Length: 388
Ligand code: KG4
Ligand code: ZN
Picture 1 (cartoon, rainbow, N blue to C red):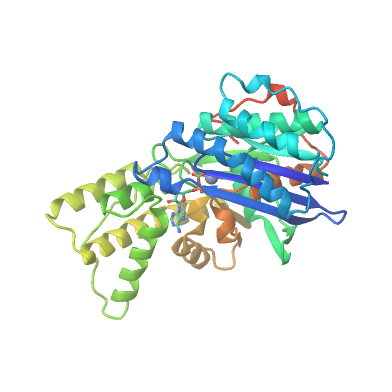
Picture 2: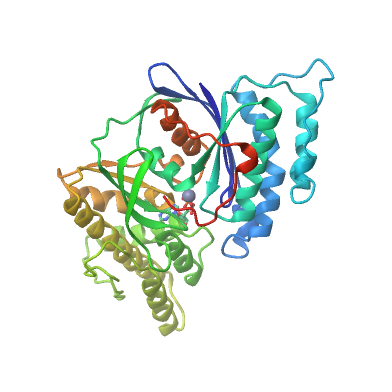
């Protein structure tokens, strides 16, 4: 079973090809990602209309690269007809202009199904991926599996690397707890098994990745802010480790004792803004100290609530997913706090932030469980608020 997956929910255009072998091993045959960071950096966040345009321009060239990498791109030798793509005329003419020469030039590849993110995310961006999936499904006469982007983040953390490009799903003792931390989401989810999820808590305002991005902006760091804020924070920790210098900033730990599993990050972000305003000029040292106090506060809340949830629901496996799962300090602190009470699963860093491999992996879990939820491609819809 070979799956072609498509991810366009936010500011990364991703295409991947995964092959599931008889032994439930997954082989990564091809993977391509185009980031729009340069396009959005000037706005300090993602600009939906520009995201849509960039996805439409990138998706077909990436498709070609990925098929080529997988050894599946074969030139047509005849003049066979190209499919009717008139459904793209009104809203997706840019995508159509790329797809027509693609279908004219290449044969149907040995792909068995298409997996595409249908939400959550930016709807104009999601539609590009969905419409591309629809066109490929019609042209190649293969089914489409709609995938929830957040499920992709969970599954990307639940695999073990067995060799170059070879992965196996981790042997998980269900129910597991998943902490999902990205630019749009901060959630605690009970994973009964792959495909069966129950949300037990979520942020009431900003997502933690969004807070990292906003703090970065306040202290003058580029978008996306997570890695940059984290780097400064670490520099402060290293510099003050021996000297035991006190951090001059002190930020709140919102909802730490709220008695539920919800989060709130807009308060910390505002506190960072006020702390920065109180200083006429933020020195490099101030920036490091503020970044460190922010990261420490945000991660403390995440870690404490995650462990409280693991205890309440008696889960011994914690799956951490989403862009912020790449954060080294989160990994360290969660490991320290969990000790030997839980097995922690993190994605490889390159799989933590958005990509299409995780969408293909989520589809592979459905194939493995023989509960493949295919849909008529004409009925696919983007749902910006799709929930697990
Ligand atoms: O999952 P993702 O790629 O996109 C969404 O689905 O939102 O997550 C992106 C978010 C951004 O907010 C980014 O700043 C954050 O993940 N991020 C990090 C780190 N790497 C990415 N935040 C903290 N530390 C990191 N190392
Ligand atoms: Zn994401």
